[in-house]
Length: 433
Image (cartoon, rainbow, N blue to C red; front, side, top):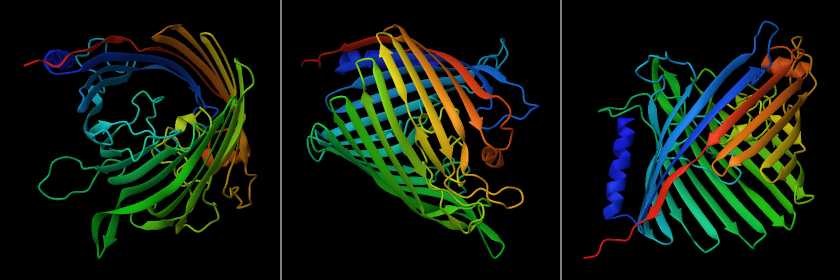
């Protein structure tokens, strides 16, 4: 806390002399959860998990005409994960974001440091704000405005364990290097188009002549997303293709990657209060009786995957990679009235690839149905209470790929309070003389 206080005093003093704007804000997000079948099916001997997690953030935004600077200090933990007499937190305090952006001109800027990278609906690149720790990248971005209605971002990341004199294996379970290009344009007030190219470099161990060395293999994600809005109707659709290669499970060789993704959504505001939608996602997968030397499973990589395919996180939230894929059909329904919000979303899940029973007989592709419900209420401007309940009605095929029991009551309930105060936001004149 002494470091946080020192940062605040330093930035405030600096702002008095040089800045044009300084903002200091915070976030507190405690969340109680009751889990029994969250992420995977429960077994008869499993008891429900009960806990309270909490995110605490303190954020400083500083801006002048030529550059911006942001520091986002974060602590994440679970109530009781250390003794009441402990001198320090289990996870300590970290920087969720710490970046600077310099504007060479109104149409060209450079942004570098630890930062959230989020685009479009966050399917491939997102901030994962639901997770208490969220996601941020150490990266360099070039931000270009080709026109008034267009934006081009070029991103680059190179990861290492630390400072070394010679090359060493990268031991963190994530990409070694990453490059991407994202372009967005609005053709009119109603129609928008985004295009993405992502080159993802993953480390793997290669053994040759009894000598093992780490190498990097690259996969490419290419695709785009279209949006359309008019009056009470909004439509969107996306398609992505993946190629290149990925490490196999043993990480001593690579396999060719050939995968695809399709989605389409329609939402209609029936009245000022009621909203109804329908949509689907199709992510290619591997057949359980298929060729092990090929990978046909689409990976959404660094997206906000909790937002998609049911809130119980059965798919693509640290799981389901290189599995049988997914076909998800959903019909969201929402109500918003003054300070109250309600959401109800049923999901109907099927596998895209072949599932085999223990006797190598093909199983039904239908995996189950999940019902998600959420209630929100804004207490005041900066304080909101949100609660939810979800239940999974699984099938035998879900048991095959997930384990556990479909006959157990697989559900999840939670309640969360968020505080997002802004302590001060003030503009200062540049000093004269």
